[in-house]
Structure formats: C-alpha cells, structure tokens
Amino acid sequence: MKRILGQLLCLGLISEAHAQTLGIHELFGFPCTTTSCPDGEQPDAIIQASDGQFYGVAQASIPGGGTIFKITASGQVTPLYRFPNDTHTGFFDNGYAPNSIAEGSDGLLYGTAGSGGPNSASLGTLWRIHKDGSGFQVLQFFCTSCTTGGSPNDIIAGSDGNLYGTTGYGGFFPSGGYCEGLGCGVVFKLTTSGVYTVLHAFNGGSETSLPMGIVQANDGNLYGGTGYLGGGALFRVTPSGAFTTLYTFASGTYALGPPTQASNGLLYGFSHLVNAATIEFFSSTLAGSVQQIQQITQPLRKQYGIGKPLQATDGNFWAAAALGGSSGYGRVLAVTPAGAIAQSLSFSGTNGSFPTGPLIQASGGVLYGTTIQRGTTSTGALAAGVVYTISGLP
Image 1 (cartoon, rainbow, N blue to C red):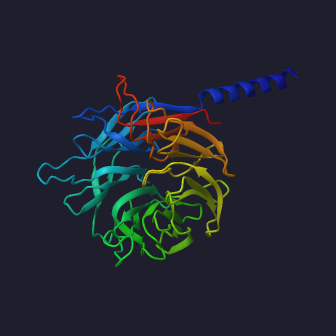
Image 2: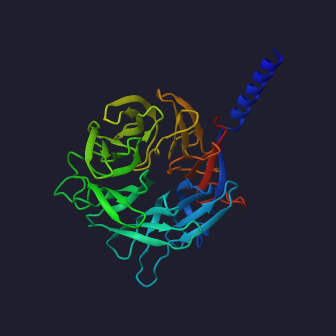
Image 3: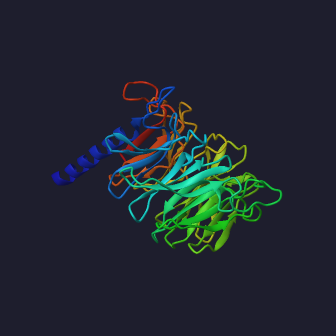
C-alpha cells in the first residue's frame, strides 16, 4: 500500500510540475538597432540537426538580407552566415529573407530564401552550407519568369536522401486566372550533389496554385496543400513526379500550409474560408477522403495564419498562430485529434509576438518555435523576434 501511495504521490507531483512549467518561455531575443542587427532579426524557422544543435534562419539583418544562425539549448546564438547586399549590383545576389532550413543526408544544411538574387528579375535562391558556417553555396536561382519556379517557401529532407520543396510562384504561366504572369508554383527535388528537378508545375486550374509546402508520408510520397484564395486543394506527388489532386476545398477555402501525418496514418491540417472568423481543422486519408473535424475561432492576417501542425508526444497537434491570444500577440494551440483545444498559450509581447514559423519538438521533448516581432533582449530592450520554448509536455 505504501508503494502504491508513493507512486500516486509521485504521479501527482509530476502532474503538478507539468501544470507549473507548461508555458511559453523566451530562449533568445534578437537585438536590433536602427543601424545593426548583429544576429539577424525576424527568425522564421528552426531545426534540431543530427549533432543535437539547433539551426535557424532569420529573415532580415540590417543592413544585410538575413542570417543563418546556430543556437544552443541554453540560448547562445552564433551567426553562421549573413546574406550580403552586393554594393556593385545593388541586389542581394545570394538571396534575401531566408525562410526555411533542413539537414541533408550529407549532414549539410539546406535552405531557401524567398526573394533576392543577382538581378531585378530574381525571386529567391536555394542554398546549402556547412554547420560551421563554411562553404556557403547557391545551388539554384529563381526568377519572376522561371519555369523552374519562383519564391521558394519550403524545403524538407526526404527519406530517400534527397531534398524536396515548393515554390509559391513560377513554373507554368497560364493565360488568365490568379497566377497569370506570376506562375502557379512547383514541387521540386534536389539531390545532395546539387541537381535540381521540377517534379510538378501547377496549372492554376483544376490543380489550383500556390503550393504552401509539403510533408513526406510513410508511403514515401509527398503531400501538400495549396493556398489559392479562390479555392485550394490537397495534393500528392510521388518522388518520380506523378501528381494527383486528392481533394478540392469548397469555393473560397484554401489550405493554410502543408498537413502533417499523425501516428494513426492520417493527414491533419488547417484550412480557411476567405473572410471567415474561423479556421477549419481537418483530417484526410492518403487517398484524399477528408473529414472536417472542428472550426476554431482564430483571427488571420493575409498570408499569416497558423503554422503546420506538429503532433507532439502528448498526442495533440501543436501549432503557432500569428494573431490572437489574450493580448493579441499570437498564441500556440494544442488541438486534440477530435478537434478540442487542449491548450492555448498566449504571447505577452515581452516573450515575443507574431509567431509565423513551424514548431519542432526536440529530442528532450521541449517544443521550439520563433516569432518575428517583439521579445526582450539580454539587456532588457525590445527585441526583433525571439526563439521560444514550451516545456512541460509528457
């Protein structure tokens, strides 16, 4: 009996500790003045690499075009690379505003910059770099009229050793329609030897347009959603390039990003009806059988809504919403598979605001994310975005 009571007491203490520690904690606030941002500003994505360390990208860095940085679990930041402004051409030749990062099977870091390049027609770059900051190399340039894509917005490491991603624009340029003149976006493949291939270019019609990123499911195929405001879709692309539209949302409803595959094999994600005050939490089979699970009240701002959901070790789907929360600075939601809100953790401004990057769960169970505004620097000044943690998950 004593042993049972002791075990129950321990469980009670663990539960109490969980309740006390669960919350948003700023890990690092990016310092920035009117003339200098030494570590970058507006961090937008973070990963934990195979060496256990964390790496991320920051969108802009006065007077440069952004940074690739390393951050320890204790919050020590080291800039690895600053995207320079070429003083001769006036352009950010290597890219501007890096927005995604992944680790390749070769141990190098790969990422995308959503804009920039060597001339006025440039629209982003695809790059790689060693973890010590050496050997930066642009592997692919994008442009406003490129059939290979424009404005890359996502990159992931595939199980086959290749990298995959999407561009919001470029690819196919139809006559008329939403993506006329812009291009409708592509899904691409990149080998670690630097070979770039367009797997599929969206047609802007039956396939919709504006792919918002992808996830690789346990069948080896790539799944994603499109953000076409007239009505988006869920799609599948095989690593060899075979494309299928799995599901088309109702008119005016679009995907808010790529879905994620849960432990039950289903895809889960968020969609939104234009001008509605809610977002929809849905599930889908890999064959495209979609179930609308729940509507969640959530304010949005243009392309900033809610990030890709992450199924954490508690079984819930965690995602960062750029707006909302008790103070209007954004919040982090945990949604059960049945659609109930299990947690709603609000940003206060002092610990950051406007979270736009996806969440990750580190090997120790802690969640990591970024905000592109506010926060507090080590000197107590207003920061230009933060890396934050959420601890206390089982």
